[in-house]
Image 1 (cartoon, helix red, strand yellow):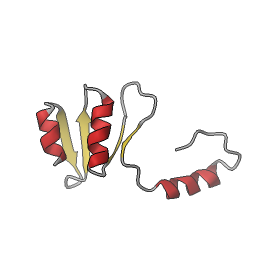
Image 2 (cartoon, helix red, strand yellow):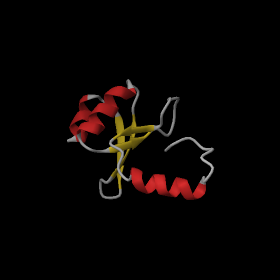
Image 3 (cartoon, helix red, strand yellow):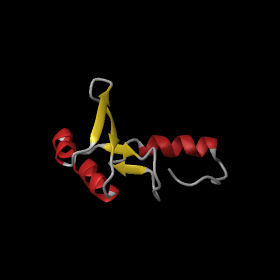
Length: 81
């Protein structure tokens, strides 16, 4: 379980939406969290702090995001999602 990994990493976390969403205060290397989320087929988003890419873990719904971007950005001026 993800909670076991987070507990072992001794990080603060809060679960909401019946455990379907977690706010995690991750002070360690993001690559480690990214790998754990990917292994569990979970996705994450970096909200605070500096990172080259805000998405972590598995990326589901990419085809829907690409279609929405095509409508909102027909000239492809914004970066890929």
